[in-house]
Image (cartoon, rainbow, N blue to C red; front, side):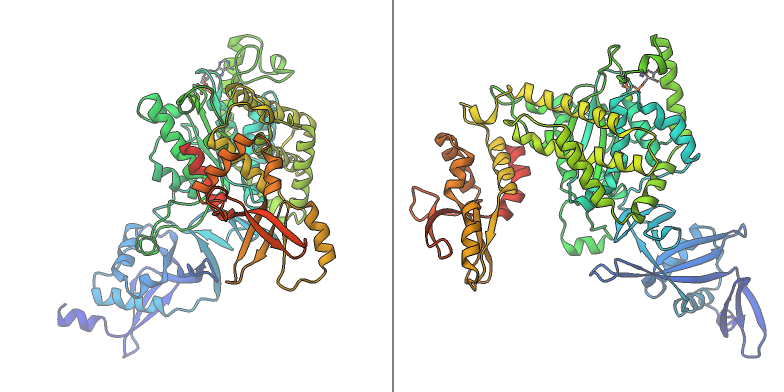
Length: 611
Ligand SMILES: Nc1ncnc2c1ncn2[C@@H]1O[C@H](COP(=O)(O)OP(=O)(O)O)[C@@H](O)[C@H]1O
Ligand SMILES: [Mg+2]
């Protein structure tokens, strides 16, 4: 820096909306650059350890257009060159004098704007608001400023486009979906995704399988048009790597996530199926693969969880390749209940349109149907995104939404009864119930122009098909009369479900009201009691397990497996897993298993995968 340049920068910086000025000591005022203004302070994850400060700035580019940028506030203090580069890249022209540039950044760093906003790296729920690119849906209505998404290179943000109006979408896209049970399921899944988190339901998805040109991709296009996720090329595909899918899950947090055409994955059929399985498990783990905290910080990784509903398509039923391994009959595996295969082409002409009036509205000849499909493909791009946003507007303002959803879930479960012996299908039914309930809510909100009764029937038809494939392949053996020993995976899944539904009585240190407790104990399956080292111990009654698994060989097999996974603790003697526990409230010793529900909860996915 020459002396002359240094001298040129002496003075005070003034930030104004018509430019940046340098005021010299002799009061002369020179315009030295186009305007940059600090418009707001922003905070991410307020009140958590991840809280970070951001500064919202507005600047005029070389074409005299105002641009906005949300930058980490530390950029203005310690990463000034990064800041200069960022703005240059976006078309801002800096003064050539380095001292002047530094002075401007200092001036920006001490600005105190009046406005405060929140920022985040990911869409989806943030408290009671739901954030999408460009707009957040708050209990008080849509808001473009309340919470905004800032750019993060480790999040592959869904586009969430907006095109056309809600009425156009209803008329040209949603109405025609009523002619296909599969289309109803796919579109309903879009409205179900935001409900998973508040309903405490984990990530699950659907795969539509069927021969080529049967309209599978159309199903995804229709769903994607609800959410605004159709580019001109259509919905996003299976093209990618396992970490890439995690970035996509973050970018579609609490939303539907399209995964078209499994054949985008390279490799032979078995390899593809293995990869699909890996992705399914990664997605259903609800968060990025665990990394060390320091690594997360250093690489500015997004460390948050997601719920998504992936919608996928493939020619062959998704899990045939994985499941055909092993001997004898197939067993139901973890991936099969997480990414549920539904056959897509089930109408009498082998396409997706199985509605009662399909031939009348979609067409009778192949040619008519083909033209209908091609028209729908265009309409799904033309009208998209508004339905989802209208739904979120109503959903976030609706204080009784969860109660309504629960009511519709119960209604579905009541209507779609399961054969008693197939208890493990209950989980799959719950997923379909959540999808139905969300569609029913969207019908109430006047977003989906369908009626509830036929929607329930359509979704139940998809479920029956999915379940038939599973029970067919497992040999259709009802749980209670299975003679052979079931696989570890099925046993574990059954056990887990039983424990989930079981009643445990919590005992407290001070044994008041013991008569009441004794009464409850009679009906209970176990107890939870405080231990002397300040933790809670869960004990499952031995006689409960006898009832759940009456066949002794099976029960022995199960306890051995649970013991080896340390889900149940050691018994008093080496040849048994039970221990005699004195329960004062019951007035006697009771044989129990010491159960680790924590280990049980985490054991099941990898255990099922590995079994
Ligand atoms: N029901 C149908 N009847 C006739 N042609 C169809 C039908 N569904 C799809 N097609 C034809 O196949 C093309 C591809 O459709 P697509 O939904 O991508 O099928 P898939 O993904 O099952 O291979 C469509 O553009 C259309 O020409
Ligand atoms: Mg396709």
